[in-house]
Length: 73
Image (cartoon, rainbow, N blue to C red; front, side, top):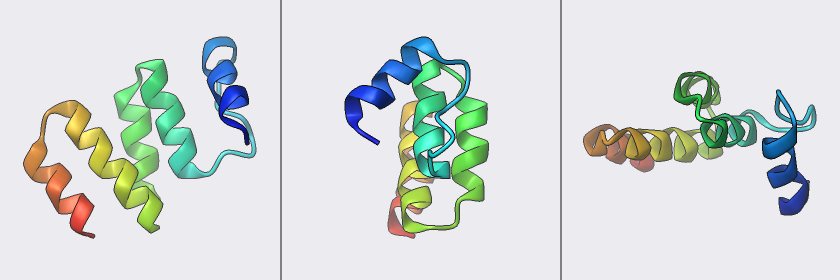
């Protein structure tokens, strides 16, 4: 998916594009302002991408200690 299409979907759509990975969908939801949906997706994604997104979400939340944990996974 191209960046422009992703950003357009955030502005126009009610759900992430179907072809989105869990990590990309989590980033989509955080841009929509739904931290809980984003966190649920990132937490369920056991890949390294999921760990990075999970860490980012905890940085957004302000929980730097938890973010550091997820960055090291």
